[in-house]
Length: 407
Picture 1 (cartoon, helix red, strand yellow):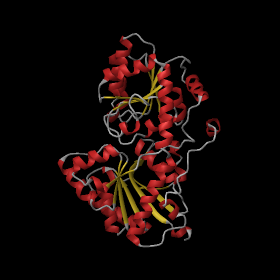
Picture 2 (cartoon, one colour):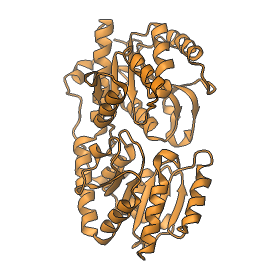
Picture 3 (spheres, helix red, strand yellow):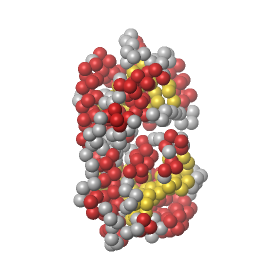
Picture 4 (cartoon, helix red, strand yellow):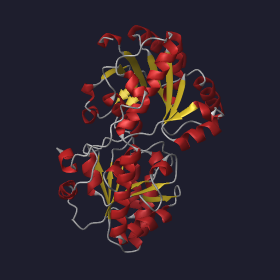
């Protein structure tokens, strides 16, 4: 099979940026075998932080469709693109591309339609009905978390047996513990070597529930302990101003350091003593996984797929959603116990390497694509496909020294 006879795949996304869902898609596209797959990313709305993502490596089609209720118009437009490009597989992602993407694929006669769910989803009655109907038009429904799949099946009324779970994966060559990176971080942002730093990475967006973190900071300040909080991430709309107003109201500005968007995520993680995620909702958090690979103990809310990642009291702590008292208590436990921090970090990295490798994630998506392509078209598969279907393409974690991985 020549390069022109590869399986042609289109990922349909609302936007591309450094958020979890989009990062997961980009990792997948970047690491699938290009001798087998020819993969494009169709972006309905916009791209943010393009320089940070090195998007020149990818085949992107930016449509810039204005927001609004124009489902049928968008579906017809997408069907035209799908026919012109002659895609074999259409892979839609989350509610934002579900209806338009699946209908567009059906109108275009695309052989395979796959839909993936990544976390938050609308649960109003009309949306539940629509999701139930449109999911049944897809050949495969994927979820990034088993807990998310259970919740979707229960809420939407869709058969759980038709949902397949593929957890996100981390590239171990990009995320690893390194004391030199810790030093770099603290020098760059003027932190002392012995500062206890609680770190958070994520957009200043309501679902991330930063107010929970801020209220925990106020409690810890009242207890008179020495600590710092570093927040890595840009604001969405006026969210940065809203966050700063609450910080001023709680009088915790002396503890909070807003570092903005940063490209070097592994450096940020190595600079922290503890990583925290206080979201109301998560699918399979890329940044929790990355923190584990970097050897950081994690304190996260017990929501979405977080319990599938963090083993409570072994690799970190799980706290109840929006319970800032619990959050402060767990921070205090880790602050007072360096041995616990070291032990949780080591266990977290071990767990990450064993369960959340990028190779495994890519393998499972590739196998899903190949199985559906063969089932729906009956055509021969490209060379190398049988090894993927036989699970022979998963590589063990690299044994190279972590210091070499940094270079």
